[in-house]
Amino acid sequence: MKTQEERIKESTTRVFKAVFPNTTNHYDTLFGGTAMLYMDEIAFITATRYSRQKMVTVSSDKIDFKKPIPHGTIIELVGKVTYLGTTSLKVRVDIFIEKMYDEYREKAITGEFTFVAIDENKNAVKII
Image (cartoon, rainbow, N blue to C red; front, side, top):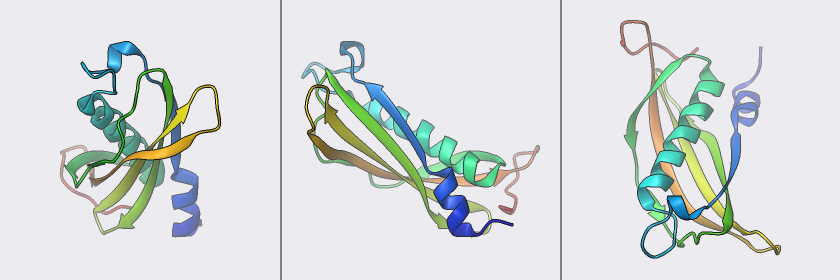
């Protein structure tokens, strides 16, 4: 049986996306709602990979938009389990900006999402 640390490491999820004009706002930066959509999706995948159970988002905690993300950049979303309860877990998602044509990279957004494991009747169940 794998340790909790091994499961956290193996469930850490990384996704890269290009920021195209159709995902930006009138300032030519990634629309905040789109960033939150991406973050919830990565958090869901991370939670599911950790638990291998049906998981639902129950809350998103403070989301810090530290840097605008301009179109024409690459973003990396990283999801990692940060807390494990009986029926719930938390996933931190960080978004990093990378310029396409040089080595520049920095953290732009951080947020935390809480998920609950559910059964077929949508009742909370213990995370195995």
